[in-house]
Length: 169
Image 1 (spheres, rainbow, N blue to C red):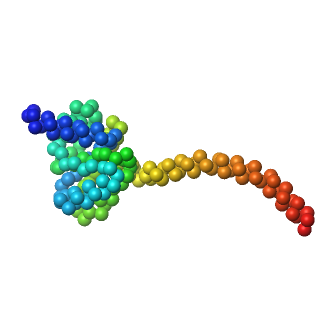
Image 2: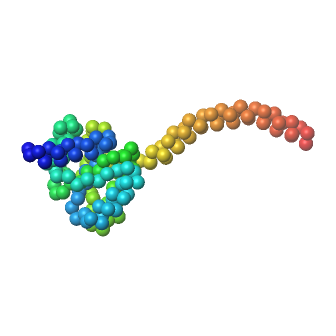
Image 3: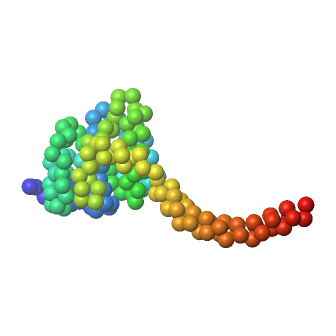
């Protein structure tokens, strides 16, 4: 392999090291303005969009000992990495694909924490609530038993007051 290709493989590996996930999308029929829009959306979640050669991508992924999807890699490929929230990135990609007229940026697969993801798993991931919503749900789970305990303790004096008020009437 030529020196330029080694440098490109190292560059792809740097991008892969930025997050615990990578999503592979179709790049066919995507215009420059489409790329600008998707990069703007991804920037809000600290995500990055890179168009790569499949042969160099396969080499970079195999050198990092990550699994590589066997099928679905016909045509042009782009990869999306970065950010802390893979669910939000998957949701953005799915929304962009759904809103584009020609079905641009179709998902091809992905890798999350060293595990291959197929399109159905990415759709499930995109349907999960965001990290802030999950934190709020977790906090409400912690808060519920405490609130029920306080209400139970408060019920005894309240019932005594209710009896005394009924007695005075």
